[in-house]
Image 1 (spheres, rainbow, N blue to C red):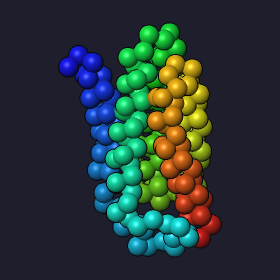
Image 2: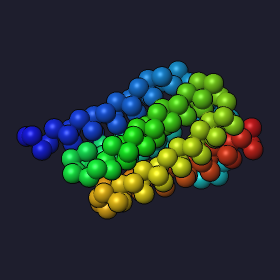
Image 3: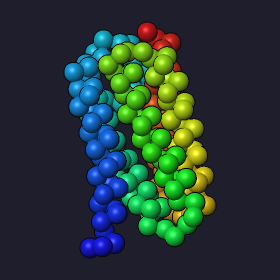
Length: 153
């Protein structure tokens, strides 16, 4: 059980950030009904499914780093924490404020923080770094959607 605690905590932490983000934006999720969506826009039900999986993977990978003996783990986990904050912040600007350009700028910072996280994690635990890759890919796709929404609306 001792070995499982960091994993449980890390997964719950990531899911909590996602849950708080969803709660904070719940009243404004109907934005998709009001805007012109770009090609390849997934149905709304897919987002919580994908994000749940991503937050679980993110939690697992951060626990792998946390439980390592690396002297670099604090720096790596700090950058990861920044990505969680940016992730949460993006939702507020995109959904609640409908500030699509500001949200896109935040998304670029998020994308860069994920790349930095992957680089830092790779030096500590390659598997942990690879578990961040779906997060990077999804945020890249979100960047396409966000930018297209700016252009179309």
